[in-house]
Image 1: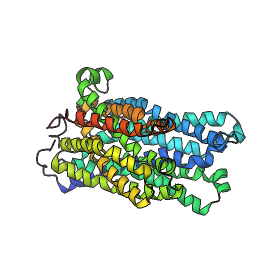
Image 2: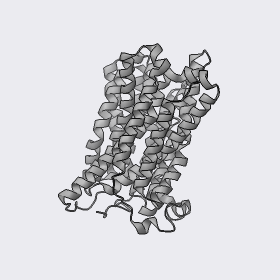
Image 3: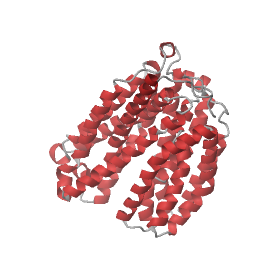
Image 4: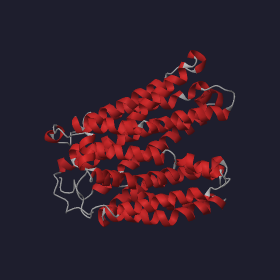
Length: 432
């Protein structure tokens, strides 16, 4: 899936496109910061909205509200994909970050159970549903826009910044909570300090909103005005095979991504018996390196072709997942854990660095954002969002190794599906 030689861009055009990449990816960072800061701050605000006197019950209810955000993603993928294909990528990204900003601000000032009773958790649920729609639409539109605006011949490199900022948003969310923990007592964090990260997210979203308002549109008027633009009928009638292909490798990609990122910290503590603080340090270091890997693997894909990168991802994931998880199961060394998880994330980087671009190349412009966003959101909600639940369920049954087999099988499917990718991209490869 290598592209034709890079065309000659003027200095002004290069600056314009690089600014567009920065502006689009900054919004992506803010979206994911706002979405994940809920998870990291919930340890402090759970009792404010779900008071029961039982910490586990409070955390479970808070986690259930977090999970609802995943269930809203397919709806967001459809809504914003349709908006991006019919009205424009720029407007879709502006609305998306505006919704996330409003949601974070609403949580920052939301009255607690002590003030308004049962209305507090109900309002929190509604706000999180609202934010779930936003982040569900963010991926597809941003991936589409960054793929279309990236410099040809370097699309893998520039598109990789979508996951740089996605992972960066998670890291900044963790860092914000850690900094607050250094300056505020536990009582202060539970009383009011948990509101600070949401206020920070709202302000950051406003900055991103101003940047995105300056973006130029990438979809042509004739594509937006097509009667098939942004319609499910057109997507499934003319591009069903592409949609199913994207579903296939995104299922495995989402599952292994969440296995070695969000679930891995609990796995190190709950299965390997590692102290919680040690596991946090290990995962913070791994995620930082993972973020830095994305442009490197994006450049690699530009050299060897995206189809080859996807095939290597599926093959290495199939071969390495079981042994890595099995060794981590019995390992007690933080250094060994760090090395093994970094190796796993390097394999995942073969996919994440170019995942949005590979998806975008499967669809024509009039249904591109819809095809990318909806396929990603469905696979992500089903396989990515359930990774932790499935892993813990197998452990509870006394057959934790079944989870290793499950991830391995999904990676084998991803490899087989990657063989269906065309040697030359169906779309985008000749666009300047």
